[in-house]
Length: 164
Ligand code: CO
Image (cartoon, rainbow, N blue to C red; front, side, top):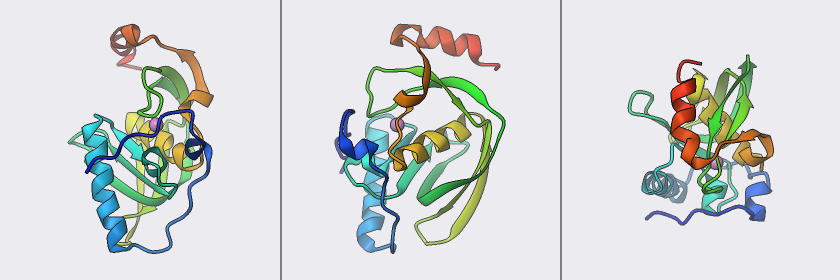
């Protein structure tokens, strides 16, 4: 079952998410439904508040190479550098813009087995982690946009900046 996406403006998108107490069967089903929802909406990341649940869960699946990250209670424990690139968000349809993010981050989270992981990522994967973890803090990329990029100029922007 794919959930409908909560669209901005909605208070659930600007409210910090609650931490997870325990990994229940219900939560595991929810994780599967979040993935279905992310795929159905062609997203590379999804945070639980975006499907109306104010709990600290985020998924990132940028491409086949990096695979799926199902993150329970994720937190950024290390950052370095900065870089600017374009972002969009399923909850803010049609809006794209450049956002400054840390170039590299280390994220600590629990997986669905309750095992704690630390993953260090750079580039666009690091950007996705930061965007999704922002959602869990009630922060939208809208608040961080430096420059809006019109949808029709997206492809051109990507081509010009692919080697940044
Ligand atoms: Co988003």
